[in-house]
Length: 308
Length: 253
Image (tube, chains in turn orange, brown):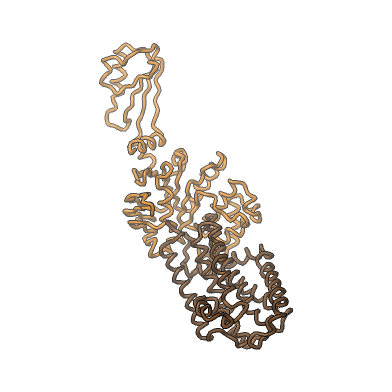
């Protein structure tokens, strides 16, 4: 199956010489939710902006449904909806006028029934005649989503959709994304929040310093890069790790009451049974044993840290 | 052609004028009335006729041009600058729309507003002087061409400006002097020979001259030359805007 978005050797160097993107290659499948993670200035927004036509690429190409975004911009842009990071709205416009404007701008004839349903789904119907300046921050973000969906796009870009919104609205947004996925919309979102990517994305890409470090299925990423930790809580503090345990990758906590062993749980031989026997042989009295699995956050931090 | 996009941009811009109706339509009319009082009554009492036309009636085309030029530039420049300033331009840039459609929407609306203002000023002038439009077709043609060409210039200014000061800079420091020195209130043969030659480099001279000819068959330059210069100016503006969109100047990085 052809990808709905295909990015090949894409680079962007701004006029001041700043390289925002370096040789990005990425295929996005129809109907999936892809989360792009990365620290500030990593190049996430630049990547989205190029695909949407707001920023010119320096090198490389992007196709949307096999159409080049520059040569066939009318086709590609009509398929895309964009929710920008900033609350960029005409503050004196009414909610209704602004969504009608967006729909027309993308070449769609007026459809009040569709737009009313859209506003209803976003809990905005009661506010349709309100001026945008009278709405709360969360409501304004919903208006941006309504504008992006007003022309019934098959691809939706959400640039940090939950930045600065409260927990309740964040959960609402996640539900909304889930509902859109059910209608077959492909969703690409950028976020700082690893828990957001973990909660709603199918695949996760990590961008840092303009480079796409890794992109993979969320679970596969955890399998590949996730580490498992086993913590031995000791009855009595020790000063050093016994010599008989030196061959194991163990770390002693500063207070000497916890030994931590990090291992790959998906390797063919984890050696846990041998380690337990070795700990017992070393005469260490155990009070408790805990295990934990790396979260996407740990993976993300490690990847970015390694690249730095 | 994305006609829906053209329609919504045009409608949006026209609604903006309606929301600020006093500023959009009443202000230029009041200013024009003041010009009639000062130039028409006070000065006109000392200059009875110019080339056989009563001075009060003689300045009507010039006054209309003064209002049309400043309003066309102001409307079009603000229309495109404001979305750039607020950031809402992202939507236009990401829409399936060409620069031609964007131009028709924004410049069309700015030119329409100027046309309405021109019509109101003409009607207002009718209360002060006796109007005689010898060539109504050419009068209307010059009116429309002027509104379009200077709305195009305003659009360029709105794309070029990166702050509100620059938005006002060209209209205040360039356009207003050009209009006052472009024969709005006199014929250029009233000037010393050197200044007559200098005036020929002022594009507004051709507009005012052609427009005045359509009223009274009195002109500084030939009607054909006037028409050619207006069309040339419009073409130069369109090419400049095309280049701005092609390169993304002040629009895309």
